[in-house]
Length: 228
Image (tube, rainbow, N blue to C red; front, side, top):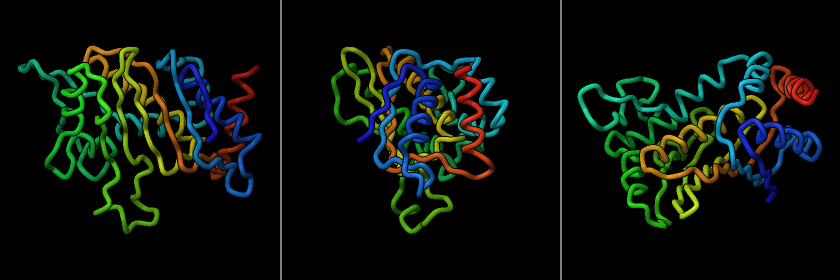
């Protein structure tokens, strides 16, 4: 397995693309099979890179991820606890990753349960959230099939390890948004459970660039501007 070690969401995007452009299988969209990207040290957005990325790719994918992968619950004005389930169609069951996390099959809030478990401050090996639902997704071939399959959480003395498993990661336009959203999720879970975020990892069965709408050209332009 290829492992990309990075210090921030920006560093993850840059190093992953440099690797795939040089070493990815060019017959299959510069693909790498079973590729892991680890983010440790800085989980925040770099305003300079964020501006460059948005100038080239636009705002849609980054803003879309903020309504699909992680939607930070808001404080309820009359309650001490956060509202983990919002009255928002963007987090509706079966529509988004986050929707499935907070309202699995209209019956179970995985995020709420995860926070309860993390607050125990035990070295648990059994804290996880499922995204892929074999009942609804198993017969799908492409449309509607979630890329994100599950999220594993390991609280340890040094901090929380968040690992997201993807069947496919088309990172040229989506990777940056995914890494930012997962880091935001990790920070939120740590805030709620009084933990430190140690590492965010993504493991992709297929990690690739994609080459629709000049994506590879845009990737090279971002790298050129960022490295200049």
